[in-house]
Length: 79
Image (cartoon, rainbow, N blue to C red):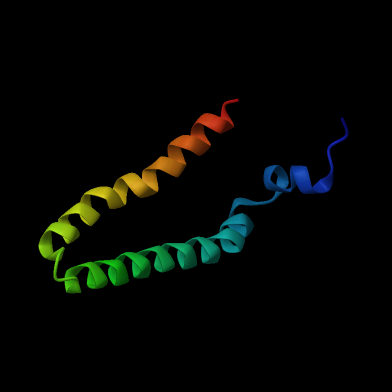
């Protein structure tokens, strides 16, 4: 199968250029995820039936929520 330029670009491009190209989208996605978590914590804390138990549950589940796609992608990558 013939490799195209799009397939070899990540292999041949300089590391600095790749970092500049992909750093901003990565930072934006991390900021959006952090803001989502902050807003979620505020809504949960204001719920009269959840309160601190809801925040504690969200704090426990948050790392699991973000680690699960990493495990799935890692297992698919090896296929």
